[in-house]
Length: 164
Picture 1: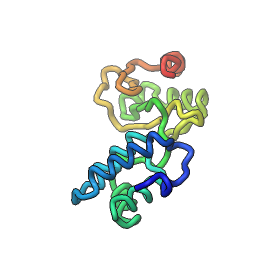
Picture 2: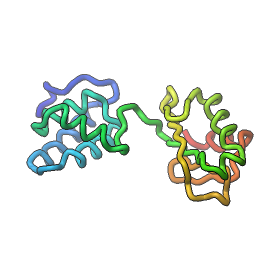
Picture 3: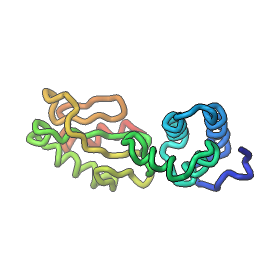
Picture 4: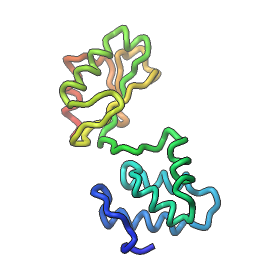
C-alpha cells in the first residue's frame, strides 16, 4: 500500500501509517490474522477509527464488514479515542458501600468526564468495573497499573494530579 491511498485522519501521522503498513504487509497472507492486525494497529493509534478499519480491510483484502464485525465483537477494541491514563473504579459492593459513587462524581466534575468516557484533553478515560479483587482496600481504583486504596472524594484529585 502506498501513502497516496492513506486516508487523512487527525489522530494518525505518517509514522503511524508506516507502522500500520508494515503490520498489514507482515500479516496479509496469514489466514485469520485480522484480530492480531487490529490489536497491533490499535496499540499504535490508541483506538480504531473507521478510516483505519477501512484501510486495514483494503490492505488485508477483506470486506469492511468483516473487519468491522471482528472489531465490534471483541471488547478489547475501541472505536473512540482513549485517554493516556485509564482510571478503573471498582463499583462492587464493598467499594459502593464505602463511597465509590462520590469518587466517580468528583472525577467527573473535575475532569468533565462521564463513566465510560474520555476527557476532552485525552488525559483520562474513566471505566467502572464490577470488581478489582481488592475489597480490603475499598474503595479502590486502578490508574494504569497503579492500585489506589481507601480512595475518597477528597483524596482522588490529589492522586490523579500525579498523572499527566
